[in-house]
Amino acid sequence: MNRKLAKTTLYFSYICLYKILAEKIKKEQWGLKQDASRVSQPQTIQLLITSYNRRKVRLEVSLDLPFPEDPRKRRKPPVNVIQQALNIKAYMTMYPEETYLSAATKLNLHRKRISKLMKIIDILPPTFIEQYKDCDDPKVLHRLSVQQLPKLRPHPTPIGYHKS
Image 1 (cartoon, one colour):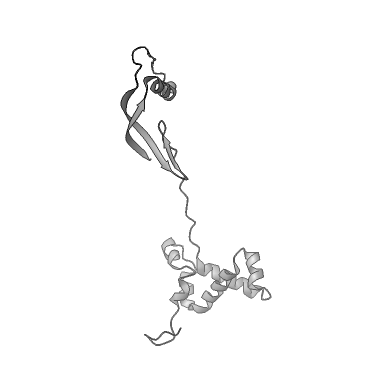
Image 2: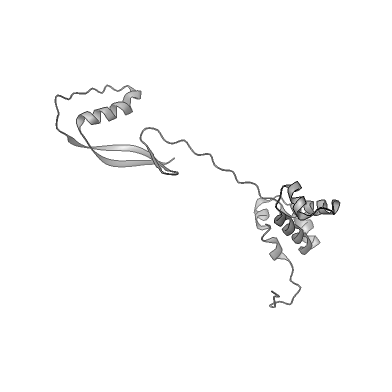
């Protein structure tokens, strides 16, 4: 809860202050009465006001009620990329006449993602694919993303020499 106790100095005449407080306190039925005959000069008062601040598009301030809590956005669970790549590979072998573009429209994926998934299946060793195809751990699946999996391929070149 964004609760902030703000000490604010307000400059009002007594009549103006009565009108502001009467509107805010009307719900609580306090016995606030105006007696304008006693004080006619503007007076300086200092109030301790509890204010609730929130910044969204602009700064919002509430003097009476706190703002309702915003619902937390839930993260989507990470997708098992290897399982998705195996499903794409099975679909492409079942329908060899399909192109990546036509398969992308039917599978509701982008053609570049289909291309990357097919490349991942070709690069990774079968033992690695078997080990992680049924993985459900979100931390492991976060590490096994489409961007990270091609970097895991075994290098056939000697150590220290990377072909670019």
